[in-house]
Amino acid sequence: MVASTAWSTLVLAGDFEDCANANALVANEASKAVSACRRLAEKGDAAAQNALGAMYSTGQGVRQDEKAAIAWYRKAADQGLAEAQCRVATAYYSGLGVPRDYSEAASWARKSADQGFVQCQHNLGVAYAKGQGVAQDYKEAVTWYRKAADQGFGAAQAGLAVMYANGRGVPQDLVLAHMWCDLAAAAGFKDATKFRNSFAGKMTPKQIADAKRLAREWKAKPEQP
View 1: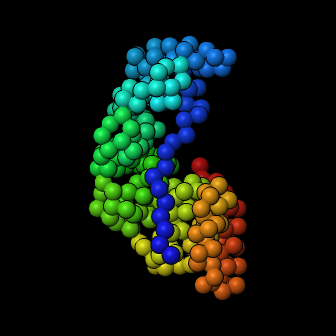
View 2: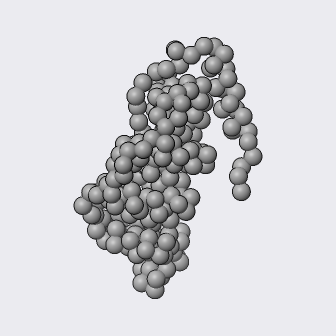
View 3: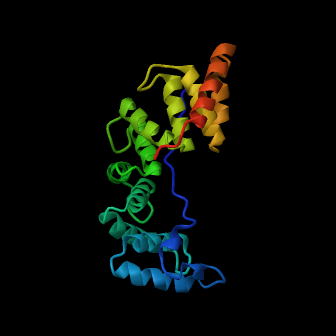
């Protein structure tokens, strides 16, 4: 029944709207958006620095250059921008533009996660679950998975399901594992259904019904401010 979720990478689409004239990205005028972002970034605008890093990472309007991307992400991260901190963490985890360093990845992930950035809350959970860059600690993994899962992040919901199914950091509870798998599947996490089916055969019909009820109740709860 052992399974795990992986470190998540950020989706880059939409990052460029932080810069003036970012609509120039359409109609093959990406270079204009780059110029607009660069002007703001060089003045110290953290959002523009982060957006310019994304442009270098994707090669939109500039030659793709992961080292340049991490340099701009780092400028924004040093100013405390949570998304940029998570991008720096991801770069260190993946070894993109910098040497792979799980300790640095976990350190930057925590800075971002402490600000409530959901993707790095999940990634910090992965780090603790696997002992990557931090001492393996299943209870800490559960803590960070739960923070992201409560925000509806499917990968973290799946991670929490894994912990409940295997009794890691929490007492084993297949009902809650099933519930979190259902929520992860609804959030679009592709492997959640397959993992749920790996243990659902060990559950009674009542347990499965309880899990589905809990999932419905979770979906119906008011959104947190």
